Image (cartoon, rainbow, N blue to C red; front, side, top):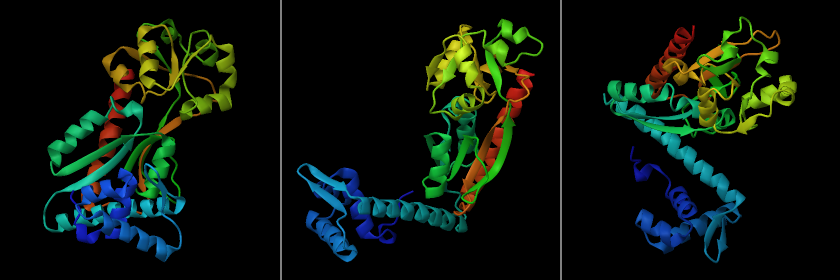
Length: 312
C-alpha cells in the first residue's frame, strides 16, 4: 500500500532514507528532493534533540544509537499508518489490506503454500508479507509491531502476546517408512539411542530442551549429525540412515507423503512442545488483517489434523 507522503513526517522519512541508502545524496535521489533540504532537516533534528543522529564517515553516514531509536519510531509510524489506511479502505467497502506474517522454516513446505493460495482466492485485495524466523524472533517482532501475526513453537500467552490458537505437540521420533524403530510396540529414548541421530543445532528450541532434560541421549547415542537445516534432517530421515527427535508438525509434509512415520515415545518424563498462532496484545489488528488471521488459524489447525489422521 502506498503511504500518503503528507501523513508521514518528512523528518522521519528523510532520516530513514539516509539510513537505508547510506548518504544524503542517495536519499535525495530516492525521495526526489534536494540534498540540502534533507541535510537541513537532519541538522535541525539533531539540534532540537541535542544529540548526533548519524556518524559522518568518509564513505557515507551511519546511524548512532539515538538515530537507531528514531529509525524504530519511523518504522512504527509507517506500521500504524498502514493499519489506519487499511481500516479506512474497509470503511469505504474496499476489501484491501496487508498481513505481515512470521513463520518457522518448517512451515514453508507445510501449511503455508495452501494458506497463501486460500488468501488469494478469498481476499485478492490483501497483500501478504511473509518472513521466516525463530520463536524468539516471533515474540520480539510482535512486540515491536514489525509483524502482525506469528506461527511459532512454544509461544506462551503473556502481557505483550495474545494466542489465537495453540496445540500440544508430543515429542516423538521421525523414522523412514519401514524403519525397525517404527515396529517396536512402545519405543522410548533408550531405543532411539541405538540409531544415528540427526540433531537440530542449539539455535532451535527443541535442541535446547533435549540438552536440558535428556542430555544423556546426545552423549550415549551414536555420534549425531548436528545441523540448523531442517531440510537436511528430513532428507537424512527419509533416506533411512538417521532418525530424528522432533514433532509431527515439523515432519508433516513427509508424513502426508508416506515417506516418514512419526513414532510417539513412551518415556514418562517427556514434555510436549506447542505450536501457536499469536498476535500482539497491545496493537489491535485492522479488520481485514483479523479476517485473514482467522483464516490462517483455521488453516494451521486443519493441516495438523490432516497430518495426525494420516499418521494414525
